[in-house]
Length: 489
Image (cartoon, rainbow, N blue to C red):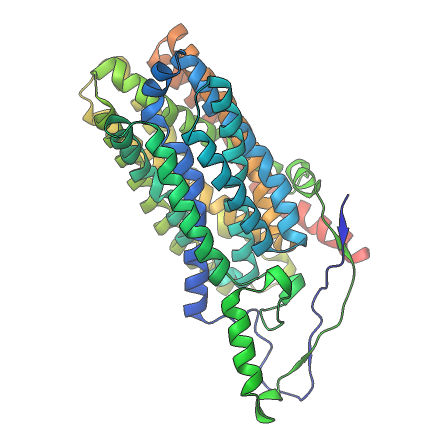
């Protein structure tokens, strides 16, 4: 294990003040900028994954491999998408969010340059794994930033905005991928990602502040070294020049509280801890089935309806729009539900029913996804007009992302000091199941048909509802026991 000193904030005002110390000193405008930055950062995960799908037939032909072999690059991408956030999430929870963000984008940028120059299949697999290692962690890191700067009352709305930015590529990346592959060639996909990531990395370095609470508290403690953005440095120097006696009445005294270490096993402990394993596995099953349908779309639509690459890319728009609308509406609704239940809660704050506030509507979204998936499978199987399966992808995307937004917000709520690691644990589980699903879906379709393949998937989703029931019923008791154990330490 790598260890480093990490200062928790213990701030007391030198002069008494009637105003309580805020959870975060960032204003709404500053929070909006931070959320915008991390939302754009998160787009790289979905861009790198979904812009690739329409080009699969072309890349397979160019590299002289079968589409089944090329689908393994999707599987390997998802495996590293699962594994890498467990490392970067642990680093971000100890070393800082900025440091982790910068490192991941440097890795991603290098991988994209290599992919644009790929000449062999083995190079494609290796570099896709490296690309995934750089891009996949942005979701966990962004969730960590949200946990740093938002309270429970506002977190759902900000999480919705964050996830919306994350999901925009689901609507547009396949279209761009189809256009690039059909006009400039598939290598243009990776040159586009190279330019996009390079420009954004410069923007991130300049503007993203450090938010890790063990380093900067509520934002009032100046960051040091790489953790301090150039903008923050200039602002601090300006404030120092214009400081007056009156402006120092709320000065805080910062005391080191304890040493901390980079806990690489933190995400693993969260994943297999009983406080969250049921909801994580539940989400993972629904995510895997969604990814199976998305990954199979290009192959199934080309084989069944004879679409071109550009036409295939356009079929992904409905799924992306459904995802965006799902996360925007779910985020605001989560805030509304939290405030409503909090207003009725009269007991101890530690006994607040957070499971009910965050997970109560999961049942509706789960049923919607089950119905849309089975209809998707059978309409393709029976060669129904292509508009019908495309419409079902809208509802599948909406339902899946609503489930994902609620689950992500819930995990940040119950693991506030390990928000990046908690999101990494979720990412590990869902991406590993998704990787297995995407590798299995085409062989499964070839074996038992499209309709029965997605009927089987729907049956698995229905059985997994038991996990949601267990989380709702037993979660409060497990969480209370964990809290008591932590207080005894």
